[in-house]
Amino acid sequence: MKITSKSFLFISFLIVGLNGCNKDEKTVSPPVPGNEFLTSVRVTATSTTDPTDNKAQGVINSLHGKTVTAKYVVLATGCLSNARMPDIKGLADFKGKVYHTGHWPHEPVDFTGQRVGVIGTGSSGIQSVPVIAEQASHLTVFQRTANFSIPARNAELTAAEREAFRAKYPEIRRFAREEARNGIYTEMPDRGALDDGDNERRSKYEARWNRGGLTFMSVYNNLALDKAANDTAADFVRDKIAEIVKDPRTAKLLQPNNHPIGSKRICIDSDYFSTFNRPNVTLVDIKSNPIEEVLPNAVRTAAGDYEVDALVLATGFDAMTGSVAKIDIRGRNGQTLNQKWAEGPKTYLGLMSAGFPNLFMITGPGSPSVLSNMIVSIEQHVDWITDCLAWMRDCDLVIMEAKKEAEDSWVAHVNEVAHTTLYPQANSWYMGANIPGKPQIFMPYIGGVAIYRQTCNDVAANGYEGFAMTAAERPRKAAAS
Image: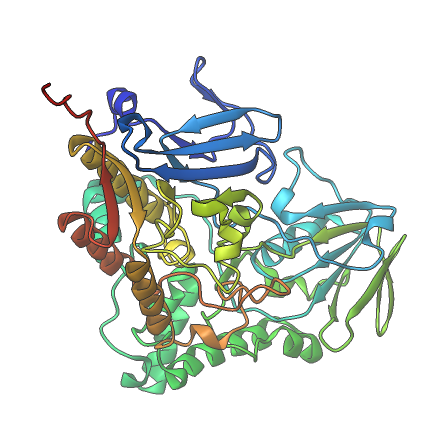
């Protein structure tokens, strides 16, 4: 269905997330940090003999006291938008500037001449460390867990490269949607890692390392499935780290050894490992010597104090569910979404959760979401929801809700597929392991973008199988006297 302004006149719904849209000027103002724009959402459904009362309604309350009602509520709150602030003793008393990579200022930050501490070596830490090291008088990197990272190899595209891409753009888009496992355009491997000899395998890894980017994990088709195959890729990257980092002790600390490569979201970088060859950079292992507290001008670990003028917290996000958990979302009988998800998120297709009528989610838990090209997955969800609402309108349906049995079956399928892979072997944010007290369950759907898209299409083709629909009741004619 083509989305037009006319469509929205008939389908009244609110997309939560476009906080700063100015409809008059058709511009978008800066978003409110985090999800502070919303405080609560209540979705209810009623079906009585009164035809005007047979409906679902979402009531949305904002931080500034505004209340909005909508027939449908679509949560487009983002999978990685709720920054995790670490609970470190004394952090509030630190005298210098404290930055979080998830709430980075819009204006430039200059660390020239400063002693800077970076806490965390996930994706944002790995990307920020080389840049900060070029400015700071000294940079101390506090690492708990070493992570695998592949060179980004960012470069300006040539005119020839641009034209070649444009010439096959429709095919690239079709492939990403309908064939690619993760929605990324790359060659599809036709063999496993152990099907090649040592020299051939290393040559292929070397070629992907030199090309750079996330497609390193697409060299072979079983790197996420077979530990022996995965070890060949992990060993290659560990060898690369040893080649790049001159100090053997530092290199050893930077070599990941506690999880299969790719089971945590693989990072990409620009000169991350070589940054530790700089004389103004120190790596501190806080797994063996944990941070005890932050002093007014230093970070104290079990091994000693490290004086710093500024702190950068690269401590990640409460992924997948965190942005939704910050909102008081209530469904049938006043049940909150947080109560329902207390033991882990439960959805049908990552699109709806039973007990919360007319409440849709964009790339929710149980969909490919963070394991995929997010643009491809977001577009698929937006198109599917739009088509669904148009179908409901045409069929005079007013309430839609996931059936519990369909939801239970899908949750079981998501977990079953996940445990055929190596992903659950890592304490990753895919599992919620970075948030103390959060249930550890594999949240995204790992079956692949193409398979998932076809499943959603089949559900729709079968009259939105697995969803309960309620029609609008029409006034009954008065009985003849």
